Picture 1 (cartoon, rainbow, N blue to C red):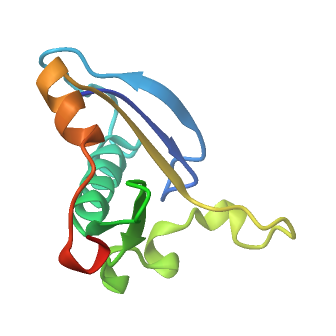
Picture 2: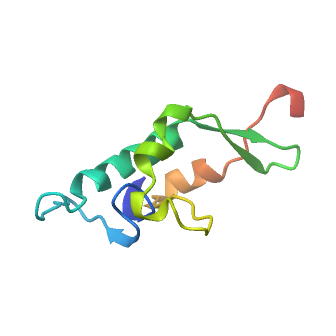
Length: 119
């Protein structure tokens, strides 16, 4: 599995960064206080969230995804953009990761899991 792009919306100083490509070695270059560390922090949060998600198979073989993450991974006071806090619109933070799977990983990902209570 390989990360090929990501999108960050409404996280710290970043209000919208769409489809940032990741190819081989990726370097973030820019002036101080422009969001480079916040990009890395958003990726860290996204990967922590993925690692804290579990799946439960249904009798039909479909998977239900359950978030079991820790609440301290994301804190509104620290992580929601200051400039959006007073707006009347309910806007959420979005972190979208796009992955590329090889054939074996794709088969494994789509394979139904088996638990005794569903057998």
